[in-house]
Image (tube, rainbow, N blue to C red; front, side, top):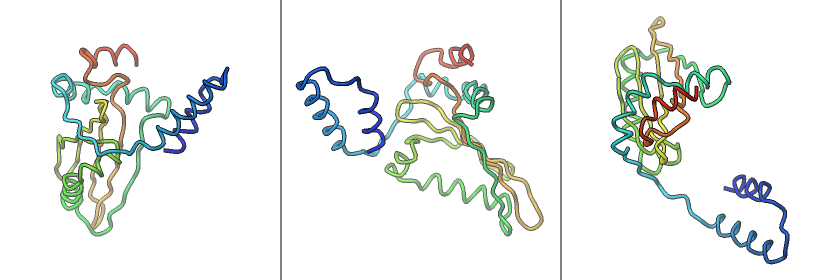
Length: 172
């Protein structure tokens, strides 16, 4: 919260009058007092319709991979767990997230699109209906497995905007 407040203050133009300075300080103080509430963002009709299309195309992921932004990839090793066990545990954790925890993770709405011994793929919508994807590939290794997890933005325009996949392709 404080970094956002400081950023807002540093991005504001310098006050030209005492009245402007007082108003800016009051607005900053009010912003600091606003509590963060749990969000529930059931995807809109357009997001529900366009989300799976944008997930397959994922033009935002192209940009993210090239520029190194809006995507994160990690590798996890599970010495004594099979791919089936890891997939099941991941699904269990995701399904068990409370609305408050989902809001803190900035993914108040999620849908598990695929979950099996080779992969887990999850569509996550932010409160503003940007679609992000979590993709976990599972490979057996000895008595355990290795998971390669990627979390990435699928586009630059929220899926609630009509024709968002086409707009995102044009912007990529």
